[in-house]
Amino acid sequence: MIPMIAKSEEEQPENVGSCTLSDIELLQAISRRVHFGKFVAETKFLAEREKFTELIKARDSQGIDEAITNSAVEQQILDRLLLKAETYGTDPTLRYSQKAQGNIEPEAVVKIYKECIIPLTKKVEVDYLLRRLEEN
Ligand SMILES: O=C(O)C(=O)C[C@]1(C(=O)O)C=C[C@@H](O)C=C1
Image 1 (cartoon, protein in one colour):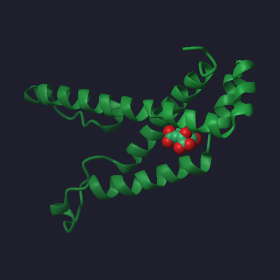
Image 2 (cartoon, helix red, strand yellow; image 1 turned 90 degrees about the vertical axis):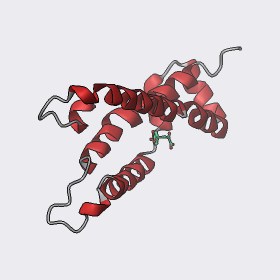
Image 3 (cartoon, helix red, strand yellow; image 1 turned 180 degrees about the vertical axis):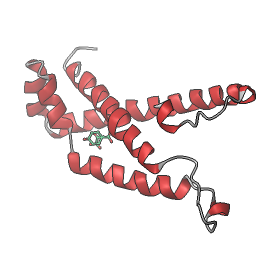
C-alpha cells in the first residue's frame, strides 16, 4: 500500500517519527474498518440463516464468499471513494491554480480499497461465519 501513496523523491529523516505515528493510526483505522465485517457478517447470517448454516457445515469458504459479496455495493463504495479522495485530497488553496496538486492520487485510494481493504473485510466476514456455529 505504501508505495502506491508515498512520494519517494528524497529522504526526510526528520519526518520518520510523525510518519510512524500516522502509520499506526492508519493501521488501527483499517483494522477497525475491516473488523466491522464481523457485524456485517452476523447481519447477513441472520437474514439467511438456513443458507449460511448449510454453507458453514459444508466448510464451503468460496460459497460463503460468494454469498456475502455484493458487487453493486462494492462499486458504489469505490465511486463514492473516488469523489471523496478528489474532494478532500486536494489542498483548497491550490484549487484555482493551474495545477491543482492533490495530496494523494484518488485512483490510488480506490485501488487500495479494491485490492486490500474490501478483500480483507470479506476475509474477516468469511472467517467469522466459518466459526458462527461453534459453541461459546
Ligand atoms: O456492505 C457489505 O455488504 C459488506 O459486506 C462490506 C463490503 C465492504 O468491504 O465494503 C464487503 C463485501 C461486499 O461485497 C460489499 C461491501
